[in-house]
Amino acid sequence: MSKILFMSTFLDKSRRNIETAKILLDNGFFIPSVHPAYYGAFLIAKCLLDNKKVMSFSEQEKKTKGKDSHNIIQKAVFPLLKQSSPDYMVEFMKLKQMRKKADYTTEEIAQESISDNFKIASGFVENIAKLLS
Image 1 (cartoon, rainbow, N blue to C red):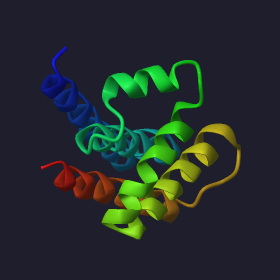
Image 2 (image 1 turned 180 degrees about the vertical axis):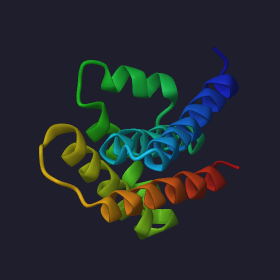
Image 3 (image 1 turned 30 degrees about the vertical axis):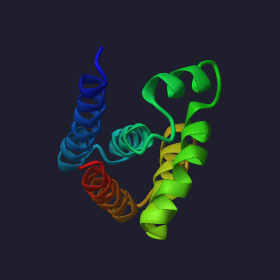
């Protein structure tokens, strides 16, 4: 698969995850919307690493295979996010924390928090996509 096709595939997946989160929210599936919102951000973070030549997609695959890929990608992308805007780094951490809470706990999450989470995720994807241009 060519590098351009790989990038476009991950960008498309990122945007589709955001669209999926929106559909879930609009249909009252609040907690399930958190998962695709986070993955939209995670996938575009992978694109940013490749685009800025920090870690190519193939390097990402090698370094994360059988390991905690989310922490590896997070550590690698934080300097880029911080350089662009410290808010991006904070937003990415919030999205990951909310996903963990939604996926792995039975804690109640306020609908307003989930709506805010979606806004953060969709804004994050939109802003990071601009950095790829």
